[in-house]
Image (cartoon, rainbow, N blue to C red; front, side, top):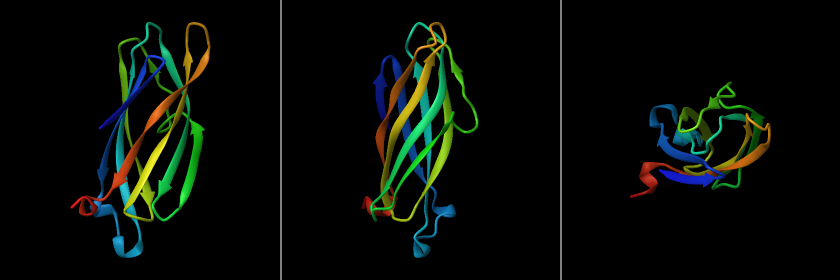
Amino acid sequence: MVTEVTDGVSVSVETFYQPNQSSPPHSEYLFAYRITIENQTAVPLQLISRHWYIKDSNCDNREVVGDGVVGQQPIIDPGQSYQYISAAQLKSDIGKMYGTYEMENLYNKRRFTVNIPTFKLVTPFKLN
C-alpha cells in the first residue's frame, strides 16, 4: 500500500492483479485498485473530479479526466473516510498510475488539489 497526504487529505492505494480477467497472450492485463480517502481536516470536503495518468511499460500512456469517482462525488466529513474500488486495463505486465483529485471545502467553497500517490501495477510473475 502507498499513501500520500495533501492539505489534510490522506489517499491510500492497494493494487490487485486480476489473472482471471487478463489474457497475457493478447497483451491484456487487468489490475484492480482500492482507494481510501481520509479527511483529516476539521471541515467537510467533497470530491469534485479526478485526473489520472496511466502509464504502461510499452509506452502506452493515457489520461483520464472526469467528474467524481465511480459515478459519485462523495462528501467526506471530518475524521471520516471514503473507499472505492476501480480497475485499469494495461497492454503490458508492468505499469503505474498517479494523479490528482479536486476537492472542495464545503464551508468556504475553496477548491484545492490532492495528490494521488504513484502506485505500481505489476503482475505477480514479474516479481519472482
